[in-house]
Image (cartoon, rainbow, N blue to C red):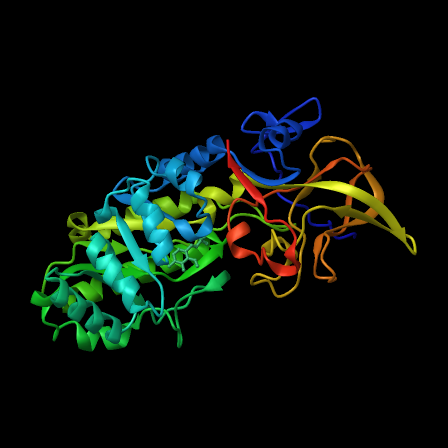
Length: 411
Ligand SMILES: Cc1ncc(COP(=O)(O)O)c(C=O)c1O
């Protein structure tokens, strides 16, 4: 029996009209004219709103939704997100300033990240955002800086849980990690701390990222609630917030499917009922890519087509310097293709030939599509990479080889 060839999840989040892909209701030619640029990222606000609606449809209302800005720190996008979510999670001083300037209240901003530098800690204390401290030294520094400023730092502990998330794109907990304080150490520390020195909020239990397995997420939530309960039990003061992590993935590669939040939401509801004490605690799930990745495309112009020893290469004005994660060099072990289309020939039947799409960098790593079947392309067509709304320009080496930076637009 022939094994079915895995295919990409359908990229049906955007409308198509007259074979033209529409992002924010606009054709790629029109977006290019609007920007006066022939290579760009475009983000569709309606698709973001749909993802947020899916979250609220399934996840109990008692759990708040925060956006992890690192997934897409484009200022206009952050400003659009501001009224759509209950808070922002930031990972640097710059992200913190963007979050504050969007108008998000400081009490709804949390700052997590290993190796926070002293000026970052100082700025966070002045701003009044919650510091998710990741080491005992960081706590001590926050207390000392707070004393110098006569301001009590607002502190939550990032926990490095002992459990490890199965089947995660990126594991951020379990085993030795640079993130957070080991849970076993916290059990010793929490009963002894002088809580008059800081404004204690609670815990941040982040276990991983880009997970598409409902069962693994359910297990991580079970473990997170159990750990949170144990931490609460040894903490002599009130716990006001628990960040339950995030980790919801999106389908990038052939064979992957969209996450069904139904069983995840049902399990969270069960956990809330099992832990009535949690009803007095603000619970948060923080998501990056789940909210924004599906809403973004990267569009590059095909500027030349060449054939080398029988292999067709679509040569484009875009590449790895704009979109490192699509090139397979941002955490993937083996490069796999993102979903790709010819944005002005949507619905055209793919030709039999497997083509390469590449960029202008002098490295074979600069591959946008590796032996994919695409509709017959011509010079002037649009090569579109879907699932590009997260970890795009700011996760890419834009200065590498000195080609122009990419433009972004929120539609
Ligand atoms: C602490 C923390 N929060 C949130 C995220 C966002 O993850 P994702 O974009 O997969 O939702 C990450 C990713 O590394 C993270 O480390």
